[in-house]
Length: 532
Image (cartoon, rainbow, N blue to C red; front, side):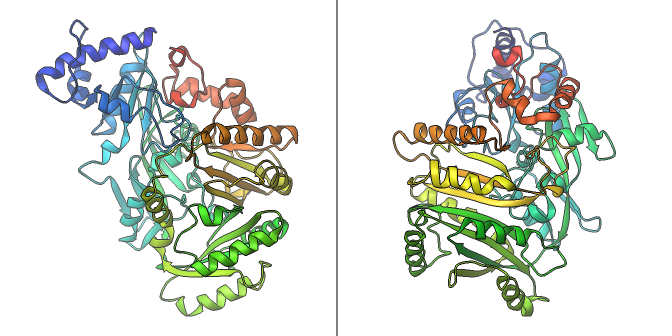
């Protein structure tokens, strides 16, 4: 409890100061605490809030499963403000935990700071846009707090765009880079972390460091996919490429998982110079989810839905599969896109007659999940618990996983949500980064995401039991999977997760966050602070 007592005393003193110079910005606190001296108070005191409204907002995340209240929230104006807070904690006899929070889109409390201070990263971008495009050099410098949708809009003004995207663009740059950032372009360009040239990071000692593959490279590789354990990303330099104007958006239906995965692997084996898709993902539809779930979007007509529902019934397994793909083009290539698409489709073995296409702008395609979000919000199933489970599965085990999990454990269920299943090329991932992939010699692995929502009483407990059964199945069948957006409750679980990287990660933690104050919600390093 010493860490919390230290923080409370600090906040009491700060509240006394603020009651004079910034009345009304935080709730009054009892007097008697000691006001910290020095420039720290005067530089960021007015940016600290401890009122219930501020701390409540920072007490839960998108998952709506874990709740943990911080003692305070920092609304920084500059990265130096974040550094000042971290230095104060790190130099204290009883340090307090600090966690950066962008959109709070974690699922298991990873962006929370129980008993500590949450840094509201979005405050950095208020009033001015911290996005600078260097068109001639082919990169954009974006603040860690910036949303990817805003990065896209800024780069498109120069006819450029980042190469790799997540499916949802209302996430912060620092947030996705702290995990990896995967999506349908990863087969060609790797995850988002593979497309970063340089970073500004506030480490767990409060030092502001600019790092890259050449400078302070150990920190650079540690932070990318580092789950916030080594510092706060305040700027990222991201590689750009010429942006297309439009996308031919395609969905292909399958009833046989072997054919489905075979076609996906064929598509991701094609080089950029070959005629092929620029985006490749896959979905699994169980039972009535095609009709009842968030896939009831304008992509399919009512007649399409009826035909697909019939295909589900005829499949015998209660499941069908979709390859979702896109072919980008612009004015110069518009005349040939139909011919290119036809040439690709001729190589595939989807169910005859079940090819669906849609022509949209490049932005409409990349921001497509926003439409689904609006639909879900309108029916009240967006701000609900999300017991998500994301796994990386070795290529050789994906058919067995489909049989045991999708047709076994989840067979007969009617989940509300989306199940993704698509392959990525292992060689597009840099093993020097903290992010982990299945430890096999295989050149392809699959991302399987059970993105299900709890919309009825008892759903959370039921979905959690199913997730546990899925993980138990993988353990029992010796499927060497890895969690993406991982969650473990013990250090032993994290050791197994990181495998051969664990010792190096522990060394870097001791170097860049020796007081173990950063991102306590991940529960990787169980320090005395986390215990308190």
